[in-house]
Length: 154
Ligand SMILES: [Zn+2]
Image 1 (cartoon, rainbow, N blue to C red):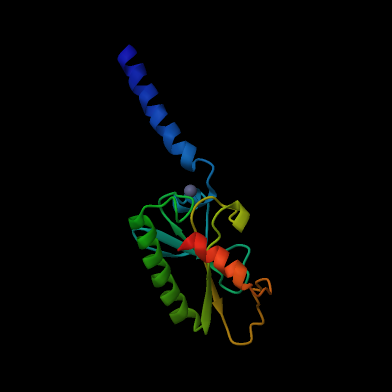
Image 2 (image 1 turned 90 degrees about the vertical axis):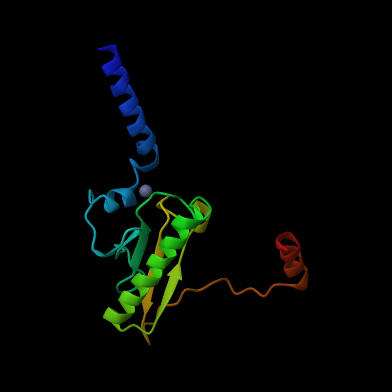
């Protein structure tokens, strides 16, 4: 009896470990099929589905099946295979939508606008004269600013 309880305890502890990472994650639930999505692509590593708050027509998200938060948190293998998935999804979208280009965007960390803490890549198909503009700040760096950044990075 005690042994069985111990086994159950161990089992529930295992679930908690998984739960801590994924229980409240909306993208894990979409990957598991617990939340419906307009999923149009799936391979061994990623799924792709339509963003419900699209910046443009057919704005899609590529999401790895395994939960990790950012490009820094994923293993090289997980991140590499996720980007192969992005390439495949983008080719699929180009074929089906006949779009003229893409914006491919990744927000990493809350400060950068990452709302769902499960790595994902936005693929936004673009069409001639769609009049969508992603506007970065209009800012020309000084030599001192470039040197400061370069000295930290080199
Ligand atoms: Zn997740």
